[in-house]
Length: 66
Image: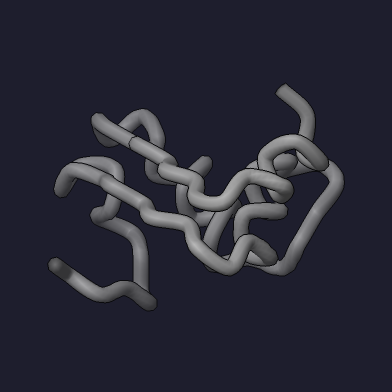
């Protein structure tokens, strides 16, 4: 599935589990958009839900806990 397909979806869900995903999750949602990090395009999606466990979210600085 390409970035265009993902951005065209009505809703997207990103699931990140385990501390091994810390850097990937931070790069995807807190760093500037980058072609080197395709998941960063989700920052442009109007309806993206991110589900992360404590391990994956441990380095995030900007988030809402639901």
